Length: 120
Image (cartoon, rainbow, N blue to C red; front, side, top):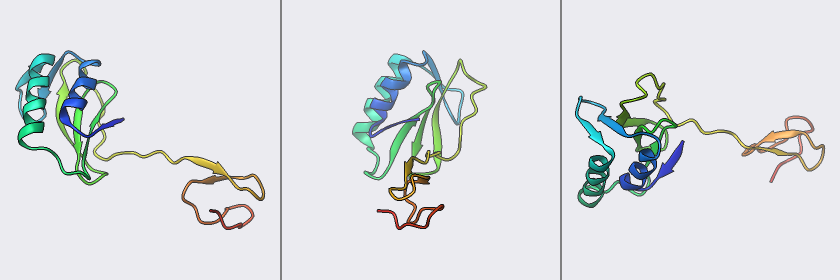
């Protein structure tokens, strides 16, 4: 999922994926123009903290990630009602290779799981 620092940036991205949205806790509906105006107003009146960010799902739903993990979905797409939205941000582990034996190791590991070499 793409991450954004402002609701307006997230709304612009979501607008390329969907044309109609509804607020997550009500049936209030928004077209792209209304969503962009609402996002710009929200950013100017109540900006998010620097550690928080917005996410946009593949279908265009917009969520707020306040702690880097949990996602509160704010705007859902009207057209993709069956989209399975996660409640937490899934981070994918990057893979690198051990410089001693060449085995694959998970980024952030302290030691190679195959030969035991200390990793940088």
